[in-house]
Structures are given as structure tokens and as C-alpha cells.
Length: 411
Image (cartoon, helix red, strand yellow):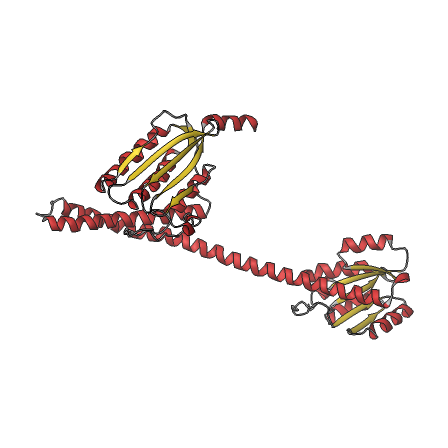
């Protein structure tokens, strides 16, 4: 049986119409009178053109299914050589997704037939005693439409699976590209940086002030390229779910000291006042210190970058939510961010056009996106408040050790 029905030819994928106007029907019943009645009903159907194949045994039905394809199969529940449900089950097993619509007929009260029809996945069930021309035509039409909808759904699912597989392969290729380029470029870049440093330090001979200025630009460019490669690798780890944080109870003052000391030279170069507003000892928070340093350093660096000479950048921290969380913020007196950009600045590769004539040193638009995802791994989110021409405030929250302990006790 399975070898024969495996040759079943499913119809070509149809475009869904409200009502099928033509269809090929296989009708299986061992009552010749009933077959004649059904033939009369379907032949005289207005607006419908049914190509009807009638058989009176399971053997002939199986042969018909091997030889041709059908839009709907109508079977009697009880036959002299078996059960019509058997044919539906065999057909479903052999043709799978190409299963046409199916209807089960019964001459008794239909209790068992209805249950078996549902179990077999039949589209409908009709009692012969109450069947009319309209009910038969309506049942066949609905069965065909259900089959078409199922086929369309399965087709779309397969398309989406194919697209998803393609995207996954391309994503993997991109990750491999990031790592390959990083490895291939970082090594010679480091060598270039070392050679330039040797020349800049005068170890290869006397260097004029003008040459030192040019070499300093070269070193800054090397640093910028390194930062951009590191950001690409960071983003690839986030996208593949390989980035994790190890939360430990840590003190914030160590994080602040690191960030302020690191950012002071660039602030001093622009005569920007960089201050830590709240120097009160704060409770321990749950964080991976190195990652929070990375976030704050990015926020402070951006604030200095987009604040004009003589401006202000303030780092602040305060207890909120009854002491359960700490709110950290970086506020500047810079150019501000246009309102239409505020909802997008944490998106990957998104870059804001400054709201003033400040020069944008250029970047890849990954820093804020990476910072945002780091804070999400800490159970929070970064937000921004900004007024064009006046400045911006970036802020996020971290859970205190106390709140973390309470959550563990509740769990």
C-alpha cells in the first residue's frame, strides 16, 4: 500500500480563491444507489464543476489514488472490504503534506464515525440520512479550501525556514569574517603602532615638532581602529548569545575612580569640568565591574566628545526605590540630541548627526548599542533625556545586594 500511494501526485500549489469552481473528486461507497445520488447532486451543482471518479471498494480507491491526483476524497465509513477511515490514514501516511481534503460519510447515527474522522484528520463528516445536495457541495468546497489553506501555510512555513537557514548561515559567515579580519589586521596594526611609537619617541633619530604632531595623529588613528575592531567583536558575541556577565557584589567607588581617572586627560584637553557629583558611600551593587566600567567610560567619552570647550560633564549616583537600586547617570552641557534620534541611538550602527557644528570624530555606531546590551544583561536598560543645544543625560539602574538577596529569598 505505502509503495503505491507514495506515487500520489499532489496538485500544484493553488492560489487561494473564495470558492473553488472546479475540482477532481474521488467518491468511495459500496452502495450503487448512493453513488448515483451523489453523482446527480454534483453534476447539477450551479457554479461548480466537479470531475467525479466513483469507486465501490478500497482496492479500486487505492488504485485510483496511485493513478491520479484529487482535490477531495469522500469515503464511506463502513465498506464491504474494510473501513473508509483506513484509506484516509494510509493516504495521510504516504503523501504527508500533500494530503487532499477528506470527508467521511456514514449511514448510522455516526457516533464512532465522527470520532474516528476527527482522529484521522478528516476535513468533515456527513450523515447520509440528512445529506442534501447543498450540504454535500458545501462540505466538499470547505474541505478543498481547508486543504488549500493548509498547503499555503506549509508553503510559507517552508519559505520562512529556508530564509531563516540562509540568515543563520550568513550570520555565521559574518562572525567568522569579524574574527578573521580582527586577527589578520590587529597583528600588523600593533606592529605599525609600535614602529610609529619608536619614531615618535625619537629612538630612531631626531623628530621635529611638526613630525611629532603628525605621528601623534597616526597613533590616535591606530587606537581608533583597534576600538572599532573590538566593538565589532563585542557585537558579534552579543548577536550569537555568547556574551554573559558574572554578577558579584561590588563597590561603585572603584568603578567611578577608574572611569574618572581614565577620562580626565581628554576632558582637560578641552577644558571640560569632569566631576563626580555624589561622593557618599553607596551600598554594594550586583554587577560585573569591568562591564560597568566599559559602559560608563563609553558614556563619559561621548559626553566629552560632544561637549564644547569649557563645558561640564557630571557623573552621579543616587539610591532610589527605597534603597533597592542605584541610579547612575552621566550628564553633559553639550550639543544635545534631536528628539527624533533619541528613540534610535541604542540601535546597532545608528549614528546621530550632532545638534551643533561640533565635528563628529566618526565611529561605527556600536558603542551605545553594546552599552545598552551590557545593561540588559544586568537586568536594566539605558535611557536618555536630551534638550537640543543644552545637553544630555544618560542613565541606568543597578540592583543593590540587598534587593538581590531579597529576590533569592523570594525564589
